Image (cartoon, rainbow, N blue to C red; front, top):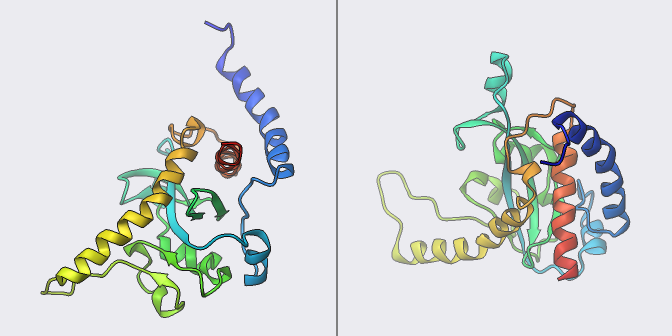
Length: 215
């Protein structure tokens, strides 16, 4: 239709993506990649009152190599993926995005490696899902769903608290729904350039933040 072949489109994507990322950086809408201290968080996000932390996946073509298949296979998604953790605010902005890693990596393991939560002030609640079991022993500001006891049941009060937490956490899911309007990070990723998937998800988050800032 456009007299524009796939290889030419690929060349233009690789030529223009760094320019777009640079502009988004100048507009200060790119998420941080790591928070080094609580002071840094306050400096960048003084108005944030609540943070939602969760993982997101980029579907990828199944590698031919069996070891790479195993490394990138997500049991949760039942397919090969790449993965990031992100911290989002109550206004759906993506504040922090961890480096892209294999889809097999557990949320808690990424948190242990990157310490995403450690840079968030204690007075700011951090909402997470059950995949982060154990972080509540390290940080006092964690809000985690009640886990059903072995051989027992949750109380009516605990079930209600879980429902209320899920309603608040849906903000994080909505944020990633916005990011994945950009099909480069929602369609199956087939590019073979090293770390380009990480650049794409960073750019998509920046575009989403730019959209929110302009709305």
